[in-house]
Length: 374
Image 1 (tube, rainbow, N blue to C red):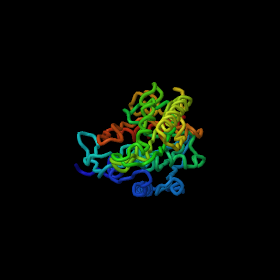
Image 2: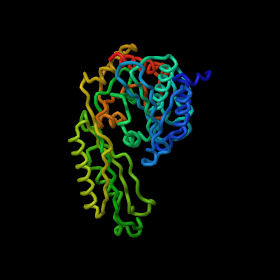
Image 3: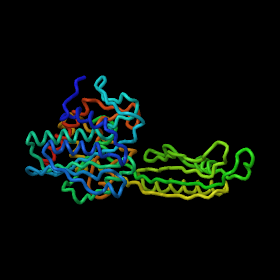
């Protein structure tokens, strides 16, 4: 296909997607965003958050000053992706953008980045009146919303905001997302030759396995889930493993359930260590807080109005995942997460329809127009 112009949502997305940007390594894609903003005629500011969170960049904030009355709003997207397992070669096939190289595409969240930039260009070049629009681009969202947490939210002039970070058909508005806590447990046993002196060893992997087997994992109820996602341990098959580390999480829209699940995990870990004659060290981290909106909350109503104006029937749902929206809601700045059509994110089958990229630009402009009139 003929390469689309770089100032279109598709052209921008194709450019951004092929730039690898795993958490902490977002510099190249950030520079492309800064170049695009400058070409539009906008000035951006990058904070110093990178040095404190282990990223090559800080948070990038760009302000389009209001031109008339209305509700000022902000749009937020993250520049990092989950780490790709190979090259990223975005192609358009049958109306969808995919990665021809067999790893993630990065639609999460570069599709939102492209939409925000394309909408900003339309606003500036079309001299579109608005009540104030701010664009925020964050690093290290995929590893605990760290960029957003490091951002000084008092710098925002906006009264409310939106992220486009839900893999679902356009029209869906997220009313709530969970609280998440993460847990790392490191079991310490005793190494020994597995064939000659196994009775002298104390298997840290066995202790970890006993702990995991005792945990409630998977879907707990319609608001909660728990998972052990990483197990690391051992040095060779013929050595009783001295060390084993597990990484786990619990999440729920009910904070009390999160606390209950975490305590159960800690109890299972401690019991398994003691019965295996091992010791264990644990680290518990509050990853992010959950939130719930009423169906008639102003930020939800504004999103719904924008969607209707763009030709979509709004619907509402709850998410099992976190997004930068969690951070802003925790800090008292209403921020709604809107679905933008991403499919199979974080997998080699990740894709997004070209039509949805264009449509989200129209949704954005419709929300900006509705905010001006609110």
